[in-house]
Image (spheres, rainbow, N blue to C red):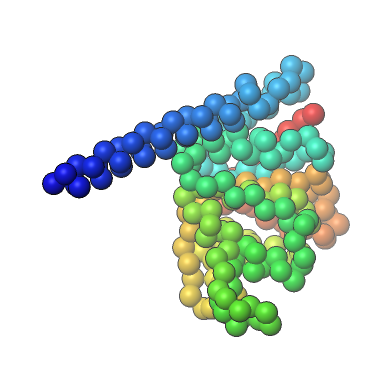
Length: 205
C-alpha cells in the first residue's frame, strides 16, 4: 500500500510539472512575447491568428524569407487546443527529393536500398499535434499529389507497405513564394487544403 501511495504521489508531482511546463511554453509563445510589431499591416495579422487558434483549419502562411513564418505557426500551435501535442517542423527545401517521401510518410525495413530499419514518418510523429511544412513551394510535383491524398484521407502509407495509418494532426504550411503564380506556371498543383477553404494567413514584416 505504501508503494502504491508513493507512486500516486509521484504521478501527481509529474502531472504538476507537466502543467507548469505547458504554462511556461504557452507564455513563451504568446503573441505579446513572440510577435512584436506596431505597423498597421502587422496589427491585421492578430485577428487572423486568433481565428486560426479557435479552429482546426489547415493554415497557409506566406511571407518573405526571414519574416518569422515559423514563429507564427508556433504561436498558433501553443495557444490552441493542440498545445499538449508535438510541434513537428519540416523544411522541405532542406530534404533531398528522393528522401522526401520517406521523411514525411515513413518506410518499412527493406523498402529501398539502405532501409535497414523501419522508420516513422513526420505525419505519424505529429499525431495529436501540429505538422509544420516549411517552404512547401519546393515540394516535388509528384509528392504534392500524394500529399493531397494524405490531407483528404487523413492517413499515410509507409514506403514498402500497403497498410494505411490514420493520423490526427493539424497541418500548417509556409512559403516565401506566390503559390497562385506557381500554379499558373505549372510548378505547383492547385491544392485546396482540407478545412482551409482557401484560407491564407499572411505574415507581413
